Image 1 (spheres, one colour):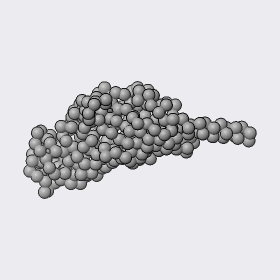
Image 2 (spheres, rainbow, N blue to C red; image 1 turned 60 degrees about the horizontal axis):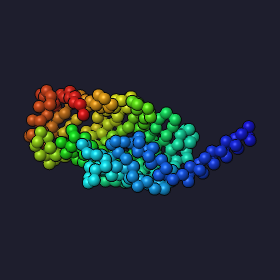
Image 3 (cartoon, rainbow, N blue to C red; image 1 turned 30 degrees about the vertical axis):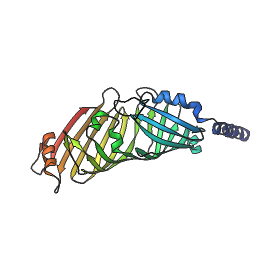
Image 4 (cartoon, one colour; image 1 turned 90 degrees about the vertical axis):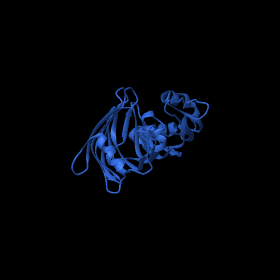
Length: 269
């Protein structure tokens, strides 16, 4: 038994040593095949053990290989995480350092799925608005923070890429610069809650709200072919908010005597 343990330990050590010297650009085509057509990794350097690259994500209605603009660029670095081997997975601690996205997460690859754990990621809402036409019309602003909550987020490799897990979110100083063509210059508020991933559906719940626009409730985001956004809850324009905010809420749902608007909103995205 002791000899077997020594042999297994030696074999694992040899595999890790070999992994440390594999150039990262050797797997560039494999990764980009998975990311196509909406994103790609460029400028890959270093090794699988420790390296760097730039993630390019296509903006709404643009091609990733556009000659000028048309993409969001996020610098990435990574380093091998040996402790992931205890979970029978190959893991790396990934760091993002771009204006659009920054933060860290551990990414672990297994035979059937990928897992995301220990995530603490911040994204500029202005950049997120550039990724989809429906969001870009609102010209959103603010900062969105995503953090791991207990169990890791798991994503299957095979279609339809079923997901499971939970993440917490905090959206700070949320603002939209245009609603129905009207310019808006004030932050609406800050919000916090959680998301539960179930197959191709993301269920979310708003648990904290502050600012001019008070929100409660939740809904879901359906991915895949359905691509549906649903919000059901209450919204209220708090004292000190501009008159147009209360008027806008009245157009979205029924307003109760206490000034809250009951909203049940669905749209495809």
